[in-house]
Image (cartoon, rainbow, N blue to C red; front, side, top):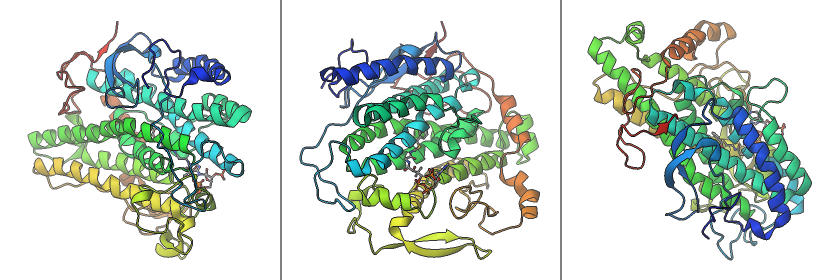
Amino acid sequence: MSISATDKIPNNVDLAADKTLQRALEQWQPKFIDWWRDMGPDGSQAFDVYLRTAISVDREGWANFGYVRMPEYRWGIFLNPAKPGGTIHFGDHKGQPVWQDVPGEHRANLRRIIVTQGDTEPASVEQQRHLGLTAPSLYDLRNLFQVNVEEGRHLWAMVYLLHRYFGRDGREEAEALLERRSGDADNPRILGAFNEKTPDWLALFMFTYFTDRDGKFQLNALAESGFEPLARTTQFMLTEEAHHMFVGESGVSRVIQRTCEVMNQLKTDDPARVRTAGAIDLPTIQRYLNFHYSVTIDLFGGDRSSNAAIFYSSGLKGRFEETKRNDDHLLKGASYKVLDASSGSIVEREVPMLNALNEVLRDDFIRDSEAGVGRWNRVIERAGLPHRLALRHKAFNRRIGSLAGVRVSPDGRVISETEWNSHVRDWMPSDDDRAFVASLMRRVVEPGKYAGWIAPPVVSINRQPLDYEYVRFN
Ligand code: BYC
């Protein structure tokens, strides 16, 4: 279905055929725009940005490039096409037709999943709100805004489901999504990582590498849902998510590249000398990695979770690549190993797999995360340097699940509070690290120029030249 350019809300769900729903969403729309003006990218209202806008879900339509004045971005509602005759492929309803409507007995859980997913989207925009003021290049500034507008669209995707399928309480939840605020003491965002600050661009790149990757895995799990509208909308969201993770992976890679150049020029691995030369030393990069990795793996929830078992058995949320797995997709008698620290050391315990599905997804995420770290290490290797970055032990710095409250070293030893305190400066970003990184953050606005702490990108956007004017400030 092609989308009319004059639609107030671009969509491929035939909104015009349901006037009540259309009116309700048109009433929510100005509230969203108010939220965007208050909490969206700081000072960006007059910029024209070279953005990708989805105007349909097919190959030609999902990535339309052109200059857009940011508040005029056309946030649309797009679901992947329905596949006729689809059946639920896991859990107690396996083999039954997929649901086109919300099954009454699963309503509360489904709403909760959709609200939790929806809440992360505006949260990330709030977290990244001030970063435009310190972008290291026009290319990076444009990428930040691209990520922000698409997170806005992902909020629309969840709000559509709430309005369309949950009636009055859905509309109330949609309002609340615009009311919670990242980091707010009284009305915070739902999940921990979305209340942390993203104060500088190294944090942004780590966030988009790790936390957007949680998005990839959670969306993949929801893309399996027996509630077909949720499956179809998350399938389309995943096409956009890939670019967000690219921003993260390539961003960190470019920071490392620049650091290695400085280390080789100065023939030093002394962090202080690297810093004096205006680059970010590798130990600081590792500490940022440690922080973002550990708060992100908490996003998968408790390692033993009856919620996760219920979500799966009731057909609401599957596993990553559910259909590619070679088992019964019921998992009743199956088991899985989770970590336990109750005896003073970290041991593995076998638990029913249904209860361990958060851990299954976390482990899938960890495997996927390792690949990118390997590619970062190749940048260091190519520079002829011996250092390597690493993902820390799964139990390190956890706040959710059975490992919360246990002090664990990066290599997975249970340690005392005293030992933690004496090393935390080496393991987690300190105020001093953050202040140093902040001191490097200055906006570079000349096309084709880059801040001194980051290497230029290897590829441009949509085959434009690297010195393209990706953002016009007007
Ligand atoms: N922080 O039974 P449990 C993305 C709560 S990212 C705070 O283990 P469950 C994106 C939990 O809610 C993807 N609280 O939890 C990325 C529960 O609360 P109640 C987002 C937490 O339900 C970048 C209690 O602890 N999508 O798209 O099995 C930019 C007991 O826990 C946390 C989703 O997450 C935490 N980290 O699992 C933009 C998918 N973890 O019941 C966007 C939808 C747990 O005691 N969400 N709790 O009040 C879910 O599937 C599940 O809600 C979770 C939690 C996997 C998150």
